[in-house]
Image 1 (spheres, rainbow, N blue to C red):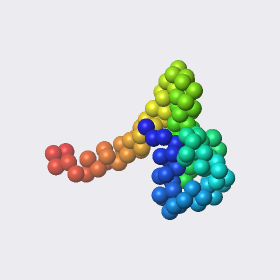
Image 2 (spheres, rainbow, N blue to C red; image 1 turned 180 degrees about the vertical axis):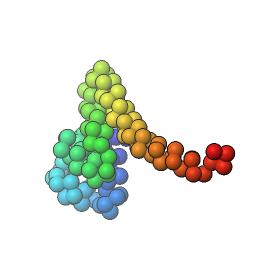
Image 3 (tube, one colour; image 1 turned 30 degrees about the vertical axis):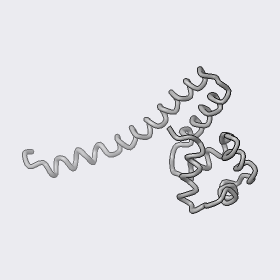
Image 4 (cartoon, one colour; image 1 turned 60 degrees about the vertical axis):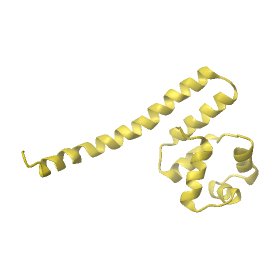
Length: 118
């Protein structure tokens, strides 16, 4: 499971942002906020998580759930962390399921076309 900073770093690499200043500017946050995320273990607020998700083309709930897990673990709240871990798995698995369901009819069609025994 990715940490919220992993998502930020992925987006930065995708956008070509090399400094925390560029990342902060790209996300519409202040540089000290980005510094807090990076150096002091801060977690993304939901608005920033949403912006990162949109930039990466993924479900925002995946990043929001990761941030909630980090907050719960920092607060030593194992029960809340467990709840958010289940939610994270549901969100990340649902995306894979959706892509699988979209590809399934194509796979069946392709199998019918390529099968020499059919």
